[in-house]
Length: 138
Image 1: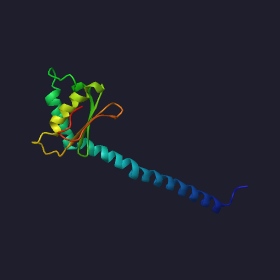
Image 2: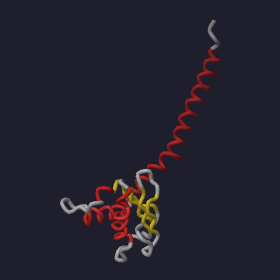
Image 3: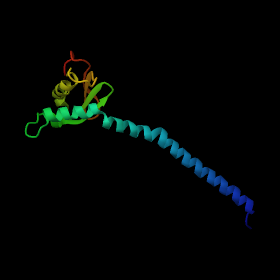
Image 4: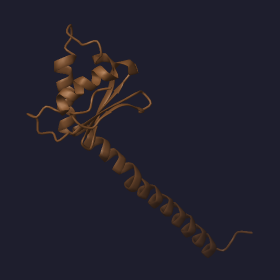
């Protein structure tokens, strides 16, 4: 025996409501979680200070045929607030990379407002945390 017609409408409306609530939940997740992460990454990628730091390192220490021994050890460079962060591998190059990055950060002729240098290993553990020009790269 077939269920009454009105019962099919109620079930269809309930299923439609469930489908809409799932779509709204997914949309909320995208706008509340994924979108801020993407925007933060985009902002970091377009930060002019980051582009300037990468250019400085490449032009002063990474020119083909004139590379320093430690330049290729830099696996990532980023900026977090007022800190320039360089990731290195192997960790034995940390002191030399710190000196190179510090040349940019503590150059008084630049207006980037960076005040500290962090050198981290491939697992983002601090190797050097230089908070001022008075600190050493050790």
